[in-house]
Length: 219
Image (cartoon, rainbow, N blue to C red; front, top):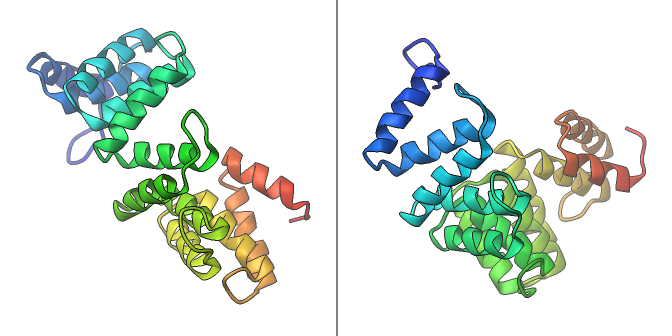
């Protein structure tokens, strides 16, 4: 699949994943589902992808539980069902999938599909950060800024934005740049803030573009 040590060949990778799936390998099921969902090495088949995710999810594979939840959330291969989406993503989060942990942290932060709960938002975001999931640094930092589930701490928020940015999160980079522009939790450095904001903008991350638009400044 990745071409490590051999020629990259998605079709062969799909065949290998299929063999693994036939003997009940959950990771192969999850990888095969991803190939079907994106049309990698095989014709795109959202319904088949959802079926594979469901099989692996019911066997207890956390990543597949998260992916199945997203299928229900977006109506991709299955009828859209927010309740089922949250149920599967919650189960994945309880099984410590970092993507699911961050997803549920944001839901608890906003009260989206679950009751608003600062302690749970901070707990789940912290668990995702402990696994090094880059975007979770942003979620946890926002909890610190707003005193959600704990004390207000701008310095900690700035550090978390910086650490998340260093791990490749464009959203963290954008927020770190805003800290530099405003002096929130860190010494103000307007020139550096603008420079980092431009770098974040170049990622074309939709959330970053929205955040920059809200700033109302020319960069």
